Figure 1 (cartoon, protein in one colour):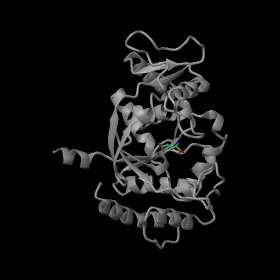
Figure 2 (cartoon, protein in one colour):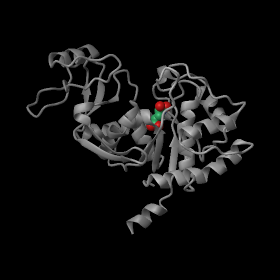
Figure 3 (cartoon, protein in one colour):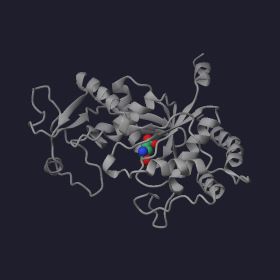
Figure 4 (cartoon, protein in one colour):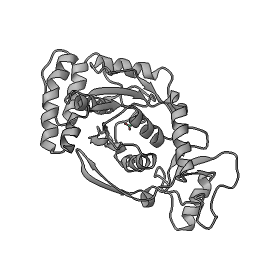
Length: 307
Ligand code: GLU
């Protein structure tokens, strides 16, 4: 009965680029995989522009990304969502969490966080995430809490070990309290954190399957904690292999990855498919290429044994 209900649930996938630069060979892997995964099960594929972190967003880049996707035959099944227009929904979610005592304001400076960590003998490695030491977390004895500075971030009380299953990577576990600590939902400068925006929007768009790059896998436990705190469903997750540059680093806009070559979209799709472990597909144009790739994706997913 439950299995039948799951089988009948309409699959909804999504691709959620940040408009900080044009799509490159690495981002096409996630776009293609999410499209194939939704369409192979007759599902819908949605597009969401993740433009919450406005200082990093490049004006007009959303249109560039949409054109790149269209050039590869990837067309969303519905209006494109913009996170910059979703502030009210994020505010409502934060209010619910705060009302339930699950989120609290924090006015720590980075320096104070580093000092508190250093006092515990934890040096902060450059570029590594700081495990928040809980300075502003309200305590049962009435202690904790912010010091009354006007600029405050909001953090989630992150308690618990999260177990989850990735459809490609298998069983995963993260002790969020120990590895991340109470994480930010809204920054002190008012910018909504990726974790909150993604969780609220995945639920609002009815996403059943999140397919994205493996660099985001270690955000999943935080997102599941947030879903639970907000009473939202947890989608299935599949994290795709990363494309690495000549330096061995993940290909990214930051390390200057070349934008997709739209003069040769089939070759771009073919390269992305190879990263996903799909066999070469012969087709003259993106639309035919995509149709022919669907059974190959379905076969590969079935072989993973975690459909
Ligand atoms: N906006 C994120 C990025 O471009 C992806 C978010 C997600 O797929 O959850 O890296």
